Image (tube, rainbow, N blue to C red; front, top):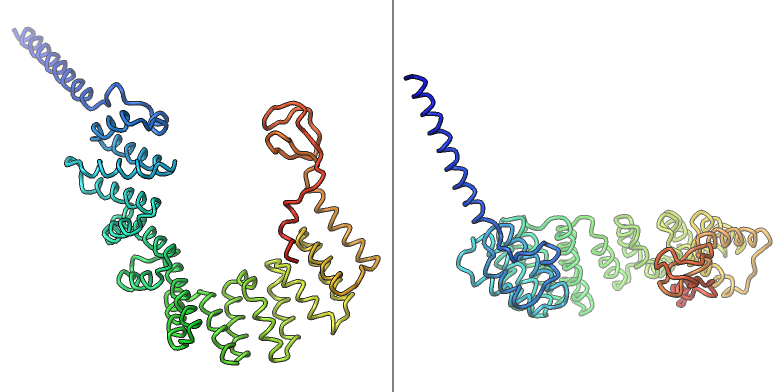
Length: 393
């Protein structure tokens, strides 16, 4: 009797397990995507109206919604901005989407408007989304809003928005705000409003203490007030914060140093920075400043030594221009150095190119390894593109 009861209980357990398995299978089947649903690759390449409509109607689970957002983004990136706008507007009209998904769709719609030049519409959405704490929506909305204001030259709006949402501005966003304040300072300076110019420079430095541009604008302000020493101090501080800004400040720095008759000071400061960033016009200026005191040949020797350490076509052509302007020739030892520089530059240059695809190489090939076409390799007769940077010397 006990064995019969045990056997009956076992049969009941098996039956229950089978029933639960069938129900689970049906439940999973109901969650599967419809038979028409393609792979992600097909999804991003299929933009027909019928397909997009089917996608809009079926986007319910998280994975399908994510793919729907991707196809909307793909439409925008392919230049079909108006279709992307319509697509995202139709998604927003759905009543079965969570607020989180709606926020994602609104962000995409704002980007659509931005790319279509409908900045007012984009701005309204971005302002609303930028206050959200969600990292996936609030931060990109804020970044896009700042970019929109930058393109429109709405510098004051950027500064005002920062003042109202200071904790949200970090890293590159803070840098953007400091440059917006600098733009306002330059506008004030150009209109003769030195009080506002100084105020905006201070604001820029308060937002980003390493804002080299704010120091440069203060230097411009000092120079306009006939205070060349203060201008020099500000320019040098800017270069200390960002050595690369020497490219923007070189001419002003030279004028300021010469206004106080301090060629030696100019040379010392250029010597500290110019070789580090290898800014050729600054290295040429060092020759021009050094030549009257150390002699032209000694100055050119120093220039060629630096150029030999970091060879460049730009530097070599600049050297030739320097010689031509001063009606000078290279000495025998200088010629050997110049030849060595040219030889090292030439070692990096291609000898042949494919006339079909543009592939470049130093060896002749009957068959191009890039496009696989035969008899398309030709020798370089000139390389005008490499000289385009020297046309203003």
